[in-house]
Each structure stands twice: as C-alpha cells, then as structure tokens.
Amino acid sequence: APSSITTHVLTNLGALQQALGKTAEARESYFDALALAGKKHPPAPITDVKGRTRLPVSEPANSVFWAWEPVEGAGPVSIKYGATNLSTSTDLSNLVNKGEQLRVTTTTTTTAPAVDGMDVEGEGEGGTEQAVKLRLDVHSDAPLTATSIPLKSRCLCPIAVVDGTIERKVTKVRVIEETKTTVFNLAILQEELGEWYAALELFKALLVKFPSHTDAYLRIGSLYKRLGSHRKGLDYCQRAHKASPGDPTPLAMTGAMQISLAEERNEPQRLEIAKSAFEKIQKIDKKYISDPFANLSIGNLYYTNLHQSGEQYSRHLKWSNDYFRHVLTSHKANGFAANGVAMTLAEEGHLEQAKDIFGRVKTAAGDILPDAAVNLAHCHTIDKECLQAVKNYTSVLKKKHHGHDSELLLFIAHAHFRDKRHKEALRTLSRAIRIAPHDLVLWQDIACVQYDYAVTILNSDLQGVTALESLVTDMEAAKDYVETALALFRWILERKQASVAKAAASGGGGGGG
Image 1: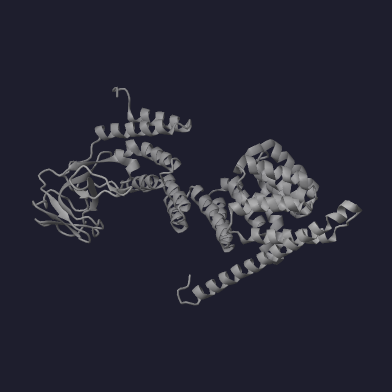
Image 2: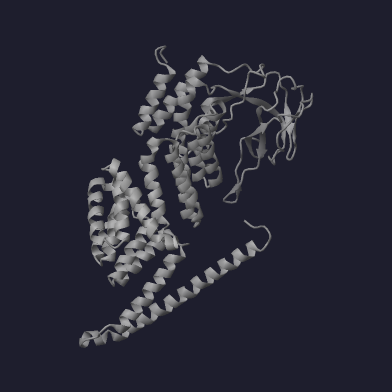
C-alpha cells in the first residue's frame, strides 16, 4: 500500500463499506489495516518470553492476527491418543515456551472407502495419504524436559503421530491503541456475518488490553444471550456497569434482558429486577429522570404485569399511563409513548380513543412501529370488526415476519373465529402449528375451534331441499370434528400430566434447580 495509506484510512474505508452492506470488501479493508499495523508495531520476538504475550485469538475467521511458523532446530515429534506429553527427539526446552500453542503435522495412509463394490486407489500404496494436523496447548506451569513437552490437556486424536513436524502460533497483530477501533469494527462485522465465536474472542481480546471498554462488555453480553448463555450475558452487563457506572446503557440492557427472560421462561419475578435496573438509570443523573427509554420500559413493565398485580391493578394501570404521558411531555413525537397511552386507554375500555391514536401512530411511524398496527387490530377484533383486524394483522405478518410468526397467526385465527369463519380459523391455526408444533396452546385452540364448528353445524337452521340433501354430509362432518377435538383434548391432557410428573420427579430427586 502507498505510504499515504494509514491504518485509520483503511479502517474508515472498512466502516463505510460495512455501512453500505459490502461485507467482503469491509473485511478485506479491516484485514489490510491490521496487517499494516502489524508491520508498523511488530510483536516482541519469540525469544523475549516476558515481552511477548499470547493473543487469545484462534478462530479461523480471525487468521489475520496470527500465523504458524516452524520451530527452528526442532526434530521429529510423536504423540498418541490419551497422552499428556508431546515426545521430542531433540531438546526443545529452550525453544518452546510455557503456555504456547503448537501445531503438529504428520501424514498417514488410510484405506479409501469402497465405491460400487470397488476399492478406490489412493495416492499412496494401499490407500490415500492424508495430512493430520493437531493443535496442542503447552502447559503453563509444568516444566519442559529434554524429551517431552507437557500439555494443557490430553490428546484426543485417535491417530498416533510419529515423526511429526512442529510449528508454533505466532502473533502477527497486537491489540493496541492504534488497532482498537479496527478490532472492534471487525468484531461487529464478524457478528453480522454469523461468526459469533470469532466476534466473541475479539471483544474479549479488547478487554484484556482495555478493561474499561464498555461497548465490548455489552457486545459480549448480547452475544452470550444469542448463544443461550443468559447468565453469562447478564454477568457481562453487570461488568459493563461496574466499568462505567455513569453510563445508562448497561442498566438498560440488563433490564431488557430480564424482560426477555421473564417472557421466555415464564418467570414474572424477573420483571421486578428489570424495573429496578430502569429506575437506577433515573438515579444516575437528573437528566435521566426524563430519559425516554427508561420511562417507556418502566411503563411497559407495569402494563405487562397488570393482570398479575391483583389489588394493585388500577394503581399499576395509572402508573403505566403516567410514565407513557411523561415521555410525551418532553418528546411529543415519540410514537412508542403514544402507543403506550393508547394501550392503557384500550385497557380502560376507551376503544374509540385508543383506535384513533393507534391509527395515527400507524400512519406516522409505518413499519418502524408495527405494534401500533397489531394493537389497532386487537381493538377491531374486540369491536367485532374482524375483517379489518385480519387485514392489519396480515399486513404486519407479511412485512415484518415474511408470513412466519405463530403469535400473529393465532391473532388472525382468533379474529376469524369471532367472525364464525371456522374453516379460515382452522387453516390459519394449521399454519401456526407448522411453525411452532411444540406449542400446546395452538393444539388446544384447534380442538376448541373444531368442537365449536361441530356445534355450529348441528345448531344451524336447515331450510329448503338443498339443505336437507346435505344434512347427512354436514352431520358426518360435525361428528368427525367432535371426535378429532376430543382426541386432541385427551392428547393435550396426557402431555400436561406427563410434564407435571416429570417436573415433580426432578424436583423431588434432591438435585433441585
């Protein structure tokens, strides 16, 4: 690259390409920036054990940070399955460092699989020559001897290595002030590309050098949540709060994560923890008393928990409305707050006012706030304006979920059911079950709709010759619907009883929790 091209220039180019969705070009620019920084600030030489630190980066997607280099002066090495030491033919105690990562390579001949009853000849006599590469971590405490290198864990390769060559992983790029932004941007890009573990190790490498990097903590927390490790996710959010106690973002993320867990795991007690996190935001500084995110979150918490608040129902509904209106006093164009106010109005039974606000928010916010369209559809369903409700639900389903969302399909089925369109309700529920076959509520709803459809058929007024001729067919259909519904009810009951028995058995086994 020309001398005028610097690490910062290449990083900014990568950021621009990333913003434009050109991920391959962005990755190349970040790699070029890091390679340039590696040449400008090379790591300490291999012989400088104290000055050289091992970078905790090993994912193939991050290969720009390291390379494999032969261990000069090393002879053949060997290792077998289950061994905790690498056997050496020459004394490597002064050539290999404790805690290093090594790679041992050998070739082995394997018999090729039969194809159509014939043996396929390999490159070597009797089979195919294949390269076997083992990545091994040198023990960080145990001493090296003249004939062996102690390993961090035992070898799990079933193929014995004899006369193998040895290489060491060498850091090519360090995480320093000059590369901090580049590494962070690359980590976000890896996250976007689905290389979550590659992103994780880059964020963690940043924290080794910059322990107060709040955004890295939060990114790790978010990634762990995606990976299903909610406890680790919350732990990193708490670390971010400790590193930057004046920043409201870690508390906001903690609250949002607790709300998500409360819904996913049906643990309403987490909502109180979430509320506490949002209230802490308002105590950080006076300016956060009117913070829209914190106020909206607390308002949503009170609203979500309404039907579990018992005698506090009316008070919590009022508080929910107050928090939403408080946001509107300082942020008049906030559609989320207006949507919240309309929700509380609908809960109080003021459907016309609620529909008016939902309609305005839907028109103003469009696809940015699909909840307004869904809530408007709820109001239409309550008012028995079912066709209009289905229209709104379907619009959101197509635009935001590409037709695949079991909850919205359930709403559509409910609207059809209220309008006595049983066949449409059953078709919609069938679509929902294909998306979420584990959801017993959907199966129960199908049984209820089938049973109600049978009752409707049996109670229908049959007039005229044509109706009388179809009486037998209708009765047979009603009978089938009743039998199917009863079979579903029995199956659901068995599933629930089995689930309760399993929970009781696991709880009474002494393990607990």
